[in-house]
Length: 257
Image (cartoon, rainbow, N blue to C red; front, side, top):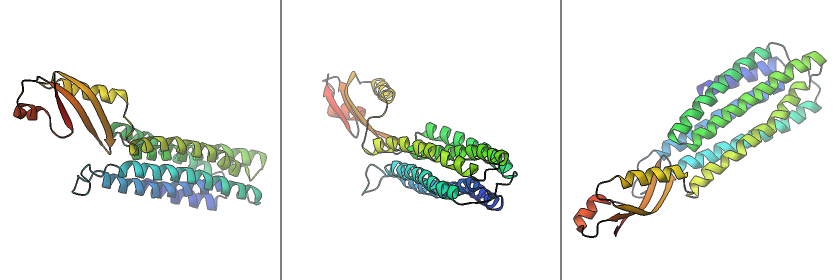
């Protein structure tokens, strides 16, 4: 968030002074990144809160809700940039200053690094919100990259609207980048079954417990950073209730083998 604030201020200032709308639009999107990062940070904070009397399964659903908000913010940023780009193309203005290219190079490098880092963390902890934030960083890098291409073209052909066209061409990429990300948090909210590899791992772990002779049904869903699993475990029929209790706890159903 701190990096995005610095980038937003730098890009907006350089864009206004250097007459580059693409750079100003890029700075506005960075401000949007700060807002979206704040939202998903609050979502993560809620999601890691322990279960309580009113939320016996915890608060994990706050995490995909935050991811949905971040993804929608990304789509909204793309629409905003498209609208403002069209307005800028219709309005006469001066050519961008050459030094804005140096700003854009730094921005692209920083944003790609942020996207890769956030993406690796999101994959590691299986967080839809952090992954969505990584996509947001990537969209910012794409916008800056296209602006970097548009500004020198405008300088070469003496066309002030070139950078606005570059910003306009970035908007559909940003929108397309945000829409697919809605699928994952919605799937989590709807308790869609996680990948088959997760079920295989659950079955392997449960089957390796001493006293378990087999497994039947295996239902599970992702809630925040946890999986809630319901198992039908096969145990020897001669076990006592006490012995069976030592094998199965909450949401585990015992059946005689």
